[in-house]
Length: 402
Image (cartoon, rainbow, N blue to C red; front, side):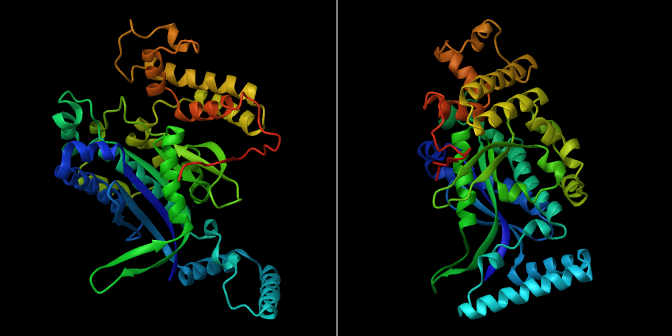
């Protein structure tokens, strides 16, 4: 049957390297990660709506089920009955009757595209529902960098030569919309599954995090369902066409890093964590210690400068956009180094790091590790074309990640 949900993919970084290094012990690592992800998704999802649908080796499909078509339609109708005056309702009934007549004359019994794409943002309670889904993802990220079992993998000689060079990490993608929910298999094995372009979009968002150098990407469909408090913490990175679609959509990130963050300082007992989730309020986006720590590298000055450069890029003013985005990247590098979020040797880092002509290996490494991936992605896209947008530029580029 057709259902509506938020869909998320969580993927383990550098998974192929881990398989080669750990062999059969990689299953232990996967289960350690799964334990954290499952706990946080079930904890933060509203009621029993959140589920870890399946593991695909290196990735997990997560589903936050809003309801089936009839359930969602009823919720939407109840909300409309409260909002609309009787005069407005009469107008809507007339419009509905006219559409039914048009479909009848066309002889089609299929659901229209408008019926399939119910405006989920109009559903009562959808903002807190969606906030919880995003919080489950972000708490999974924090939990993975706090979990005692996962921290022990840092000292595994097979992964980091025994010197703590390896860190378990994940990337995340999310989308929202409809899917066909059902069982697939035979008498030998049956799996519950979700078939939808929105599931595919969540996977594309996850893959594109590597292109943009961020931990998480959210589609415009997810952003529109969140509370204003949650949206205020997102960063609009780009506007894209995805493969197979001519619809332009904005993509967003919640800036999240683990470098320089001691998440174990904010550890909560299971009982305290459950109480935090049950007592959800939109103020969590300002007050939660995990959320504050993972965004500590993002300043208001950086966001302002990045938005200025991104807007110039979308407007087709690429020469100026490149200059501004370089400045935004400099702000982030400066913040990370000067605020002491990371230990480094002052003799190795000096003004040369802000010299764009200086492409030494060490200089490049520092900028790549501590700068902003989205700035670099947009700059590289424009510089590859000599800072000149194509004649038909409309502020949208194709998303190449699948």
